[in-house]
Amino acid sequence: MPLQSHMARVAECVHKMSDLYDAHRAGDQDKVEALAEEISNLEHLADLEKNEIRNNLPKGIFLAVNRADLLDILSLQDTIADKAEDVAFLLTLKKMDPIAELDEDLRAFINKNIETVDYAHNVLKQMDELLETSFGGKEADLVVQMVERVAFLEHEADQLQAILLKKMFSLEKEIPHTSFYLWMTILKTTAALSNTAEKLANKVRMLLEVS
Image (cartoon, rainbow, N blue to C red; front, side):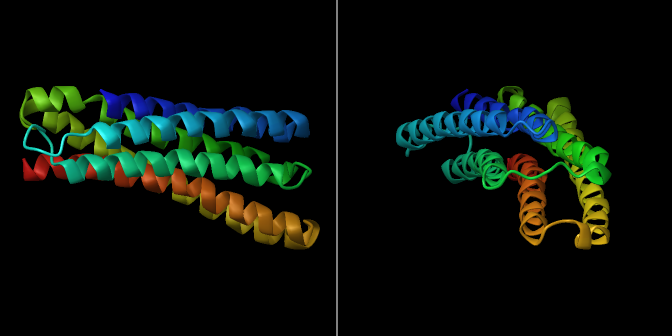
């Protein structure tokens, strides 16, 4: 339950990115700053939960799942929250004009990363049932299908990122150098959300294979 609670907090951070992009698109830098602060606060709360879990995780034989595996899952969840906070911070570094030619693709890319994290979150929600069935049976089969779905969503996010990168370079001469560099960093950091979500889902799948 604490692990699932932590992931719910992480998902909160990620969902705020939709509002963050809306604020940027509207040219409302004050709102961008405010939302970045909200995301940072949520990430801090997630950090507190993470530390609480680490400090109270039993070290003996009373865990149904290997302690190292649980800590790996926790670390991946923490990375997702960190990346959401990083994207928010990057958007506060400089007020950038929205790029109309990229708007639709940027929105699709952000939404796809959020969707991938959400699906990984759904995988974590199945941990209770997995424990009850000793990581076997129909519940395990369902989780395998969900993990494969996360991988597919991450692939779709990669494809959207490739489209964005091509368009970015086609507009290179029209975008100020500092803004171009900043956007490239934002895209890379955003992509880390779905990449890490896939790793998280795969880590849960590994528990099925060793159980």
